[in-house]
Length: 271
Length: 167
Image (tube, rainbow over all chains, first blue to last red; front, side):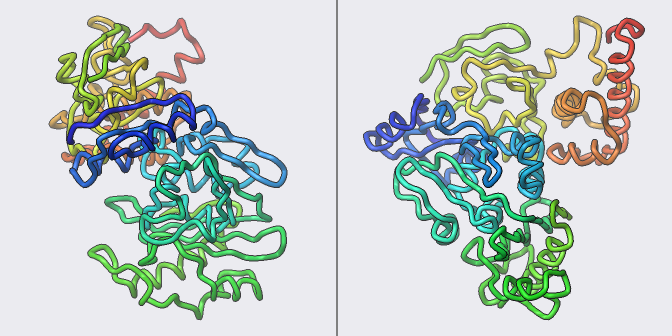
């Protein structure tokens, strides 16, 4: 790892001010993506601005209609929250399926959503639940937030402060993991919303990152059961192909995970 | 450079460190506590697992500066003098190691796991919770047995605190 200077601001305002005044800055949250990238010299920020001491980024609020999670909340805290388990069990289950115990103790929801790894879990929940990303300067609906691989609508220096999830009628999450890395080869988050709409968000598979599978949403709107998507396949042209799985295989996995998510509404199915 | 203070195994240590220093480097190179191992150095193998502020973490992926003010327990901090910790005893009794490289991380993960579940563990849960610790000797079977035995002892101790001698 190259030399860097560590900063620990106490407020968001101080963090933003440091970001605008320092050379080559980067925000740090759990650091479980950024630090490995720095160790591999794939990233070399001259200044690291740790956001975790800002009180605005912590805390969980569960209301009858929504769950709001502070960006610096570790995955393990979301997974263990009795309130979140009661309101959106698939969200708590998804958090509990990320990586391993030690990583879940440190990695944060804000870091995951800001980084937008194409195989990360949280983007599927944010998009499937029609969540809102609240930053230090605005609120961004999920449909406008995820733009491409590792790319989001965030501007330079913009900080994810909290993520808001509407409580759905029900939701399910199914993931097929790479057995070595445990990242999703394909995973689907399916939500039946209170307004009657259905959303299917797919992670791990898309060549532009997380995406909504519109055909599956329409089919499930007509008939909400696993068999409704049996005849559908996402276009492999829009899916990733790598040493772990071809685009064609991922297309089949996307369908299989969507069916499993529909079959496990109110929970998760992780394999 | 930053001046940081960490309480490690009950003893406060203040050192000047480069900001890029990882917690595992701080433990091994600055404090000489080499029981915490560096295996993969990529947050996967778990050999560097320590307990930081009450939670098992991979110390190869945490900056020492970010842990400033924190409390760390390493494998060296478990035994009470010559009296081994229950989890250490269980690993010895159940042959929960072959080469021993992954063992400090396995034991710290097990200590954290037993505490979080208050000893209420079954085999499936133990295997699931050991996902972040790799053993190259494939010694998982006896590791799982050792964790279950230590969890059983934890439960017995909870039921009758005075019936079992410590360690």
